[in-house]
Length: 413
Length: 99
Image (tube, rainbow over all chains, first blue to last red; front, top):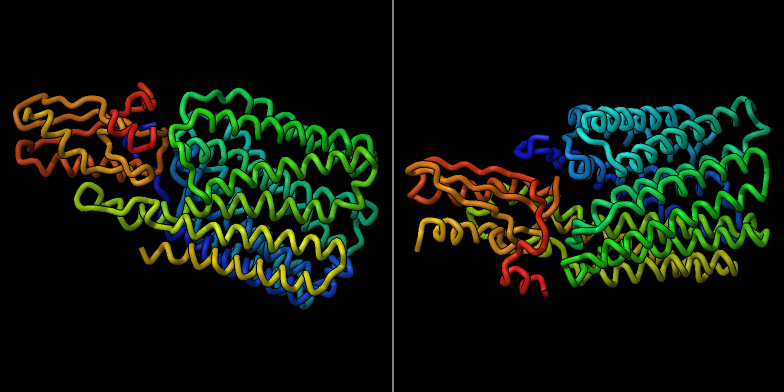
């Protein structure tokens, strides 16, 4: 790579994704609040909750992951985005697809196939963009493997999702519906998000802690254990084997545990003694993910996995995936805006430091609100308390609004 | 003050925005040479390969050198080898980072 060549992405592209994702976040949580009765009764598979879940996962988490990738891929892989104009088109298609998909799931789920296909096209465009970008990488490395596999998992997740919609309409593959549904969830949450967060954590953790001189060897063990665990777990869904399921979850647990150990080794080599609170929150999310994997394995071992898989997925989605994304966003967004506003005047006049772009201290109540809110929601679902659900969900929404406000406030700096 | 000291002193205005430490105390400036009359050449690095602040910091260094009336020709070369390590920081830089 020519070290003098700039790889920066036009910030309008990642910001388009980030801003739309925040609207989806608030809308999805309000929608969940409105359907508290069904959630308390354990009725998760109803249109309003489908809509909220997809709005949260596709409209928030996926959109934000895409936006962040437009920013992080050039940083992590030292190659510019293949085609920015194509990126804006991809944003438009994905936004229309995701929002209309959530709308149809709510009002007319039988006809959600077309918006689902538009979403699929948007995601395929994104995958094509990333494929063309990663192809240009001079020296593929272990991060390429993590991120590349995550992208493959995203493709499979969406493909299986579309097949489920088709199956609902035509009855095709109905006998495999449940296995496909489980694989869809596993590939989406553990395949796409977890492998993606693993990959980018290997770039962001050393960068935000200024760690140097650490070994990347443990990552070579994280990948085969975790990816192998996903494969074995998917096979267990199709052959309905509890032993294979336990083995698959064990392999995932081992992979995740090595990842935690590796991150701790990287942090031991850090120069920056005091870590930012938001970054610490992302690190706590990693630990939470490990604990949930441990709980999943133990529950499979004692034969109660199917009873607690719902709450486990819920905790996994929020405590690991969502909190990792939120923690990292507190670092990524100020950087994006700083680059747009101050990169041309550095050295010419005094410019703010990145820590001046966002109030890191003010992030603490947001994180506390998110954690208390989500734990409260989980407990309310477990004990069936509607009052606790409403209070906890309202607290969670308030914390989400504060988070969005903190992110939007960055662009006033 | 020698010409090299003047250059380094001026480069202290370029701060790494993530760490809020200037590029000289961070040990990012590997070499400053004067190949001919009115020309300056700087070899520098960044703390992380592919650092997202890549263009910002190098253009800041370039601007600070162009501003000096002693130079009509400025060359800034960014290298990744040898890789930056914390040992390259000055005592002032280490103190600012809390070490």
